[in-house]
Amino acid sequence: MFIKPTFADANAGYEDAEFVIFGVPFDGTSCFRSGSRRAPSAVRGASYNFESYDPEHDVDLCDVPFCDMGDVEVSVSVDETLADVQSKTKRIIDDNKIPIMIGGEHSLTYACIRAFGDVGAIILDAHLDLRDEYAGSRQSHACVSRRILEEVGIKNYVSIGVRSGAREEYDFARQNGVRFYGVDQIQSKGVVSITQDSIKYLGTGKIYLSIDMDVIDPGYAPAVGTPEPFGLAPADIACVIKALAPRVVGFDLVEISPDYDHGQTSLLGAKLIREFIAAKKGVGK
Ligand code: MN
Ligand code: MN
Image (cartoon, rainbow, N blue to C red; front, side, top):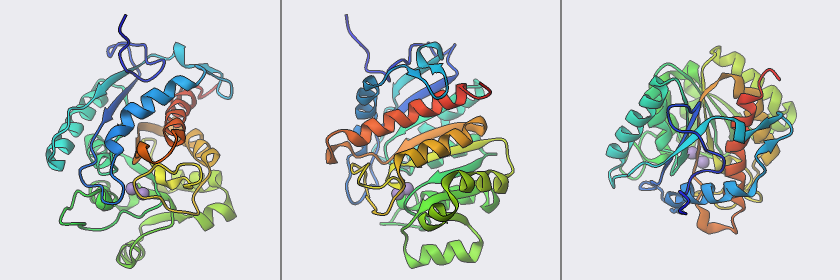
């Protein structure tokens, strides 16, 4: 018997699935530690560590119809890859399913959000990612939030966990009223309160949630493309996911570069995907 390398408990076919996982093994613009192209398979492998039952949400993932389509075949061209990810995401949305993308680098999130068009974006990230251009590319992972802002508008964008950026990025954010929450605000107000503020600010029932894994402290998630100290704890991220889940229509997890630890970052990534599905299905219980 051959076992297809899918995410654990993703036992449904596409037609029946409420959630559709797919990987995008692309890290073409990554500058510091590339290797996030290996994250989809590492996260899938790590997903087998966990029980299918989630006691907090009283959900057994074996009872949830979700599927794993495997990896998108990527091009060396970022533009071609983004176009392909956008069309594949669009198909999933048009079929009334929730896309869950495993990157790959953060630039891919732009393609997923473009597939939605009208959606509020909540980005968990250590970095502002607001450069207009980086290393000659406007589609670099360092520019992804700038591109997302252009797509959805300032009022439909919030970033949480930010603690790094060039002065020009902070100037852009302040001058344009970009809503972002630093770690100091999260520590003084609490992550749940910040998340509730974000929901109120966006004022939409449709939220796209992107988790750049470097939002988590490198002590917990060292295997990321651009690690940044003074980060959030994994339980904080679970709280954000739980608070947002009823409104989340699309989800991604990006920037794991699995060669830089002993597997703990991929384990955490797999767990966060499972948390999202359980929290979404546990709503109202
Ligand atoms: Mn990022
Ligand atoms: Mn980042």
